[in-house]
Length: 157
Image (cartoon, rainbow, N blue to C red):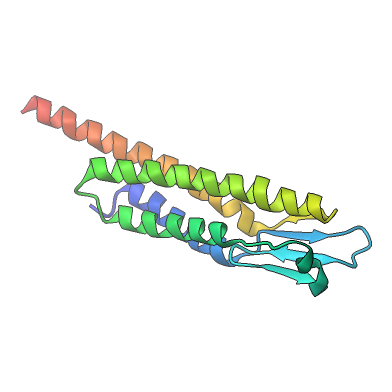
């Protein structure tokens, strides 16, 4: 049934995955405010342009990770008749969400700020994988609860 609580958690995780793709993740600026950068999941916008030539900075893994989180959560909603597969896909999605979080915080924001000696100002988009992770864990708990309920009902028969 689509109207279960875990479907709502998975839908919220889907929305968070989509928002992660389009909201800014972080802003970087040096102390004098002469160099400025804004990190999105799909690209890095830098002013002045000469700053990018110092390092090639590709954010494709972030974009692909956010896309996988959104698509996998959406697909998992409609697998309500196959609870074990739904649980497996949700746990895979939790792992992907953790990887995206680690990439975002440690590889992209931290390394860019250190390489170019800039201060980090986190934006709303960086919190979307965290919210998606919490929602996926709650969805997994709901699916597991349903599976236990079905097994208990089968034992009674």
